[in-house]
Image (tube, rainbow, N blue to C red; front, side, top):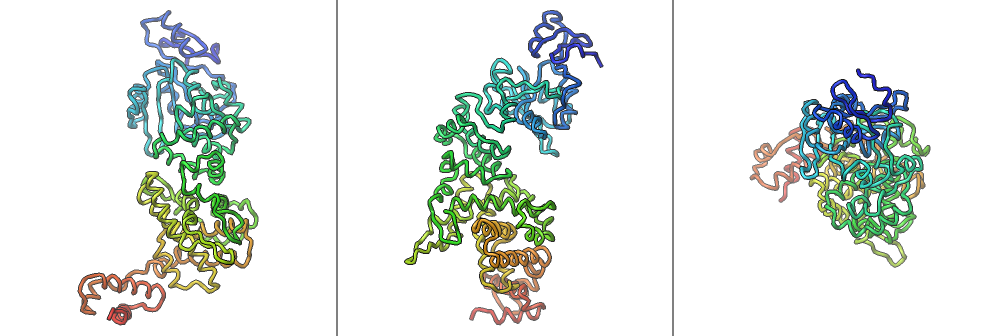
Length: 540
């Protein structure tokens, strides 16, 4: 390997094994080299400080550095990957910029890795390499302007306006013309220019999402700019708005994101039905209006999710809940990790269910003579509103219906608990008959709903009843599924048609459903009993 220690902190342009040019930028080094060796094939690379503090960079870069070191253009890693490296973590989604030839470089890298490359935007010279097995994207783009500084100034936030020579690995090599490192240290989200939101209004939502992801605060001038740019969101595609909303739900503090969207007046634009809940009052034991309660449910849901992990929950009063959930924790984690059409995982669907669970209360609120506020049918109305809104946000039909089912059934565990009676096998069967796999999400959401209602465990007797009902529902789903949730059919339609002299039609289906319920309830267990039960249940 060539000895380049004399050039630490600078770029060198190489003609074979000779240094043909040196500069503080890659462009300077190339300019000098072309004057000296104008016919030579040149490569350019940054000489990093071997004693510098190493960054937490993606292991994938180890494979890429030898390839990028052969580039005839200076290549920089930019944006979130650099930001996250400074925060001590890494991402495999890597963005690179260079003066020109980005698409060409993308295909060269793709060929070298044996992975597909694509043209994203030929006019803007942008290409992508996809690593399917790792769900990883490598994006290559031409500078947004004549040089790197202009490119960084045209980005969104200072903490994303950071660059690192693509072959460098140390903190000293970071290029930070806009104070991004100081903002990272101060925990601040700050726009890099006055026109950033006009250039791309979705950055208003990205500011909220980044604040929630990093637990940062928005700079005062950024808050003002976001509020002033709210009207511009109507010019943004619903798919981009959806993507930001989904990412907010995936953060550790989705409640903070929703609260900040309300504060910044973004919520009426993104989710008008949710924003309309702000002034909808509720009777005790609720202590908050519906929107504030919804935000609290998201907060408590994250804490309920904590109980599925092996570490102790951060709220000690939930230790007993963790003990109850322990036998089902791994199965629930698998359930929440499953991905539906459109790429959303179960955890995101659950949180969307929490966000929408009371959306029907605005339309169903009534006040009785004694002042009691009721919301009869808000579950059904809410499910309809939820599905409609999610479809308008371009979520898949499967995802929208699943979340709608969570909303429709979110009251069921509480209603079962309020009876004060043991949960029967028939009740278990009917619960999962109506909710399917979403019943698992409903169990978790119901716990968070109670905790938000009381701002904690509250009424201990009511809490213990609800936890007990949840345990029964989960135990039946995971351990008695073939008996009480979806028992193997004793008979089929052909047997009923033959034994009862029936014609094919809706009556056969009705009888089969009745048989399945009776079987799940333990009332019948043989073919003969099923036929006799069907005969007795025939419509006269």
